[in-house]
Amino acid sequence: MTTKEIAVEPDALAHLINISAHKRNNALQEAKNMEEKGITIPTAAEFYIKPTLVEISMLKEMKVEQIMTKNVITLTPKMTVNEFFDKIAEHHHTGFPIIDESKKLAGIVTLQDAMKVAKEKRSQVSLEEICTKKLVTTFPEETVAEAFEKMNKHNIGRLLVVNNKNKDLLIGILTRSDIMHALRTQH
View 1: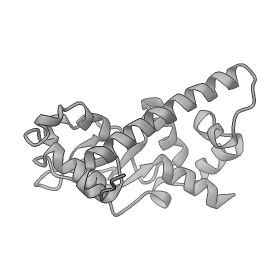
View 2: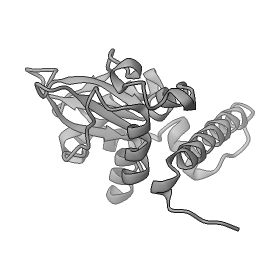
View 3: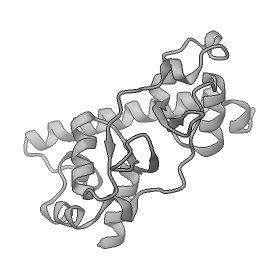
């Protein structure tokens, strides 16, 4: 068997993450189906399906700014899809905000966006060509419950946190993992 560093094979990591996400989504769908039939589901899956009243209450007491990641790794619009895969391998994130030359928020790019680009074209396609420009954002003053509701409504795993006076100014990012971590530390 041959092993290689992830940095040498970022496509392999991207493929593994994609398969993992697909498996997770299937498991969550199965858990929803079980819940609808009255079958007990694993505790870890319960939060993703329907948070408890206690968890919702806790999320209503927390502000986004309290749990968001402030030092956000960003990419530039001119980076190629291949360079994006290198960033996935380097930082182990599957989505990154795009910041233009004037320091304005230009979009967000995810693994799902990049996987749509044929492998042989990835060195020529820029992130500005594939990134999502219609953004779902949150503000630091919003409650985590409000932010979590946006994530569920739009079926996304991260929200860009922007300045409420200037929506082009990125000040953080909030992920489902941030929310789960905050709940675990509150219990």
